[in-house]
Length: 318
Image (cartoon, rainbow, N blue to C red):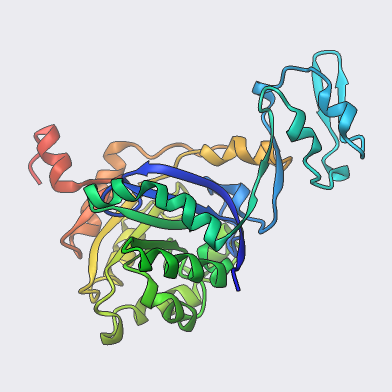
C-alpha cells in the first residue's frame, strides 16, 4: 500500500546535504524542539499556516473567506487571532501576494518519488542524489522507507539527515535503503541538551557509540554540530564531542555549523513567540573550535569548507 507523508519543502540543487547535486525533501514532524532551529515549521507533523507580514497587500481577501474570523484589518495593520485558526487554508488560497501560505502538504510515496526523479540527470552527472531531511525523518519512518526503496530501485544515491534520537533498531530497518547517514551530535552534556532541545541526549549518545560497531562499518557517516552561543560554543564541549567520534572509521568528516537566527522570523510567521536572536559566532571563533576538534579527527569542516581548503584560501598555516 502506498504510504502518505507530510512534506513542507522540496529544495533542488543543494550542494551541502551530501555528495554531488542533491534534491532535498523536508519531512514534517520532530521530537526535538531546538531553540535555534532553522525550520520551526517542521516541528508539527500536520500542515500549518504561515503569515509573512512583509508580503501582505492588505487586500482583505483573507478576511472575507475565513470561517473563524482569524483575520482583521485595522487600517494598514493586519491582525491575526491565531488561537481561532483551524488550518483550513482558505486564506492562503486567495492571498495574491503569498503572505499567507500552507507549510506542509500530503504526498504519497509514489508522488514524491516522481517529483524527485525529475532531477535524475543532475544526480547522474554530478554523483548526487536525494536527501531526506526535516523536521526529523524518523518521525515518518514508514513513509521515508517507501520513498527510499523506490529511489534505490532507480539507482539513486540516498541520504538521510537525523537527530539520531530514535532507537537504533529503527535505523537498522532503514539501513538497506540508505547510502549515507548524516547526524547531529549537539552536546555531550545531559542537562544542557535537555534545556536547549527539550529531550535527553541519552539515546543519541547510545546510538553514536553503536554506529562505531562492526555491524555499521559499511555505512558512511557525516557528523555535525550546530555551534550555538551559550550552549556548546566552548573548546571543551567541541573536544568532548570530537573525542566520541574517534572510533568511527566510517566517518567521512565532522562539520561545525555556525548558528544563524534564520528561524526567528519563521516562528513569528507561525504565530509563535519568536524569542531573541543570539550573536552569530565569528569566523575566528569557529576556527578555534575547529582546531579543537582537529586534535581528535583528521577531517573537519566549518560551514561546508574543510579546514585545509579554508587555510589555503586565506593563506593560513595550520
